[in-house]
Image (cartoon, rainbow over all chains, first blue to last red):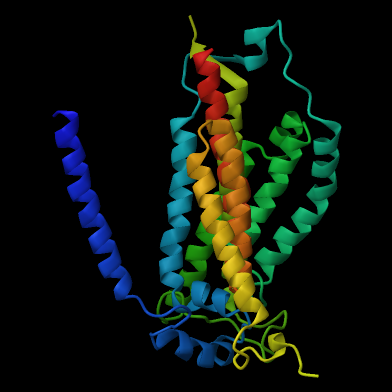
Length: 253
Length: 95
């Protein structure tokens, strides 16, 4: 195809795209104008029904809890996939990537980055733990808390301590925590089935004061399990990828 | 003296939040353009991380603190780390 014909194809396709895009824009509701009834209904009933003042958590782990189980296992399978694809094959030898270029050292971590990372680790752990275990109040959530917790492990690496990173997150324990988190969520749902209720029915006591520590029943419990699963999955993925860049594998002979 | 418009969100014609929303939307659009226009991959990841931070501020301004936390950790931290590690691996292979 010569350049002139190519330009015509682009112009026709581009004009079509612009036309459809503008046509689509005309059908959008106004800015900040929410048309559906569900949001308003949830806002009215959620706190009374679930005793969780964090309506986002209530939706995630209660009203659409079954969808969240699916999403949970997407991350679980993704982490499992990463560790399967990057696994240590039989007959492969590992050596440090530093041996590859002996004449130049890796630049040392700067003092500022190390100090900042070390100072942040403690607060980040507390924040992540709080977010994951207090789903009944806002802001919170197992997913957010889990990722914040995983960030703490990345900070350990950033402070220049890859060996400490590996010591505090051995693959066997990380995998076990990830599996326990995923299984915990599924088992909370199954516990309702054992009592003859539909899957994921909120069968724990809801408490009396919305947002109190004992309120919201299974919502806080599920959020905690999700936090464990997400934190472990992220640590596992980041750890595997770090190893990929720091180690070189080759066929052993 | 009239009270600030912030305290009565649905009455005054121009709110502080409206101005903030427009400013943040423009910043996000500029940030997204900057990510696309950055050509060198490592720099692009750093710009992408800043863009993730801007998106997090956008969600905060639009009153979604839970989404803010997700975006902050995933968009500004986790995604750039994964991309940087992949880039480091690719570069090592090329050498």
